[in-house]
Image (cartoon, rainbow, N blue to C red; front, side):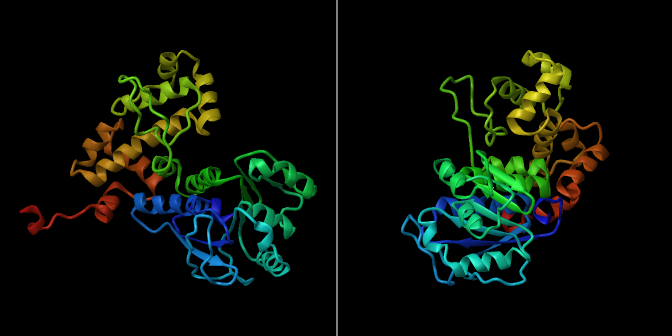
Length: 332
């Protein structure tokens, strides 16, 4: 599935937006992709908004969303996201269901976003598959479509079908797409743009910038992440990190997997590489100094990890993204 495979190629996505969709639902698909483009400094994703008739579609916020075209069944193979919120039944015309069925022959992926799941089920595109819907609709959906395995989850990926249960779960899905295509480091940076943990009211417990996009339900994971952030230059080995938290190394690995879906060493490396990338872009420090400041034994080891994570060398990033200070700017 191209949507969930490591790739350097730009991914084009079509969004079929139905009347009375929430603005936040549209943003939940687009904004993580926009954030990935901005942070990466290149167009990793491009999207196109379609409506059933090509006309601007009204939203529940009384703001019409302009369309870039009308949705028609064709041989297009770009992933298709079907977005719907309220009154989805008004859009479930025989013509639209037929168009969705025809589109499924060519589209690499079709996703049902919130009530878009109902549209996919109506078009028999979820038969024999697992799918999720908004929690308020779960019982009704399960009764209406016994051929679909309804599950209570934030999002579900089952073959070529993706479904989400709401706006924030859709953000989670898009972060998973970014993680699969560009890696954990970029997904972690993008997540910081959209979510944060409610900071403590105690002065000595500030909100952590690096962990701002994570829902750290276990205090031991929170403590471990903070320790990682405090020891970027001289990383702690897993055994010592676990001792500081008060658990075994194996238990800490399990807690990380349950809490953020990644083992400690993957999260730790992402923190260090994201710190390094900011230094590459925002400073003139040598790569050897950046390597030392982010816990790498050598500039070559840093370069290998950097390229593996960001698909380019530090020097390529700096050449591509750094703002060049012109003589006239420097004199200001």
